[in-house]
Image (cartoon, rainbow, N blue to C red; front, top):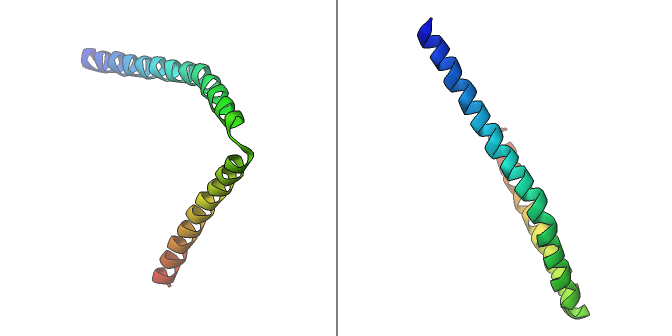
Length: 82
């Protein structure tokens, strides 16, 4: 009986430690993300219109390539299972 109480207490302490670190991480993200967003916005505003255009095109190329590669992997998996 005594051992189970000690184990329960350790479990509770682990949960409290996890929740504390989780709360610290969430608060940090809510504090840092707006700052990073403002920095990215100011850098984006300083770019020329041609650089903005190529940055957006590059973003869409990367996202499209990622999508095509993931679709290819899914097609290969479904073909090997059939």
